Image (cartoon, rainbow, N blue to C red):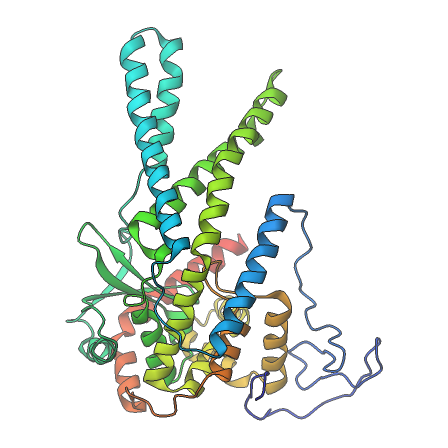
Length: 431
């Protein structure tokens, strides 16, 4: 089976042919707007590669271990069903460490208050107690809430969109959704918010806008799938422990970087030493939950494929690789003062991307091991797993072109609002 993505036939004809300076093969120069690169040896495949930055020995070790685990999980799932993550030894160990983190947070809060009460009003003795209380406050579990300025779409605002979502949740036996948030990210996400842990989908308009109808079904299936696939890191108990360790680690390193004065060296050394007590548990927790988190992403991909077909899921994953180009296209729209046509022009840009550029983006993603974030497997491995597994060829949920356009009409106020947010972000970067 093919291990590189199929792409539409290019609509441009080569304007020139140049030789690769490395292997003398002909360069791919289909469209002068895009990078000229060599398909034979990969020369200039990634001309904008970020510079290599020195990393700590612990981080390099973590990256090596994670890389082996990610590859092993992909190879394991090729030949078996992508089942929901279960409660294995690694999961129970992660819960134990998370419990210790929460107990330590409580102990710091209680101990800090006791020190303050016992030494009040003498300021010097209660200062360590104040530090403990402040650290415990920072590490406290927090209920996820929607931002006050979030653009929220309700069932009244978009009955057709929610009708589609209801069809998706019915197929996957997911929870009822009553709110969808639109934002300016080239992404989509699922989370639970508030004390009642109500499910909410967030759709990034720059991504949603470029997807065809069935790719939209796949995206919704993937995100709704996260509500049913038991990802350990998405739970409040484990997720808040990871967040608490990360916050305290960043605080300690930030304080070390800002230490000044005669005792700066001693202070920096002490703070960096203390940061190891957060880095260690965080490292262990991420490794213990890595398989569960990555398995959950693969399962979400599989659930999307069941609803929209495997071919559609593969197309949707390739669309994720267009984020950088779409970002640049939107910035160009703002600079040309064409914000009113922003989403139409973004779609025109995506339609103009030739097959050779899509191939380069896929190979670059494989070279960089690109992923949406650390909870996701590399995008190229997600694509390959869909390609290597038994195919889903019949769509369970079908979204027609007319219905998809009608949903766009429902969301027009949100599109206009997000366009203004994108414009403000671009202008802010331009200064």
